[in-house]
Amino acid sequence: MAAGLLTACGSGQPGPAAAGPGIDPGADATAAPAGDRCSAFSLSIADGVAGRPSPVAAAGWFADHGGVGGVPGAGWTDGGADESGAVVRSGGWTLHVVRLSDGTWVVDSGRHC
Image (cartoon, rainbow, N blue to C red; front, side, top):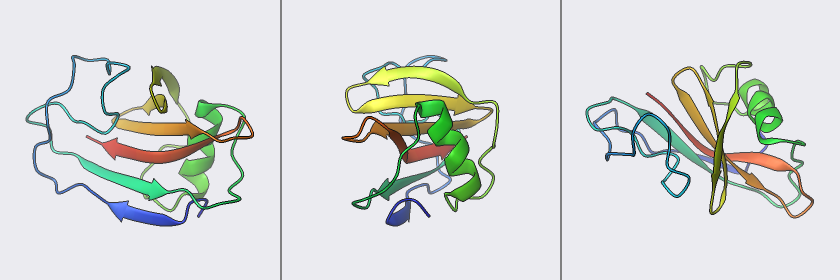
């Protein structure tokens, strides 16, 4: 696993409301629309982790190596930036990625609804 700690945050219960069909660039990438049943996770990024050249590439790598079941290996699209990174989406999955000091990207959280 690329990151140090995987913490399951989802309870399967409805989450807090988020802005419309697209995520507001300032909104929490793991916030779920009201009434949806979602699961979520967050990661602690370990020192020395090697990132990928883009947010979409980071999502693809995470799907294969991140240790979270069901994450699609393809179909990721750029969902925009927020104050701490970027969002990528594929199907019902939304992943948040952060830029490392070397300019590469890693997944730090996500949700599936």
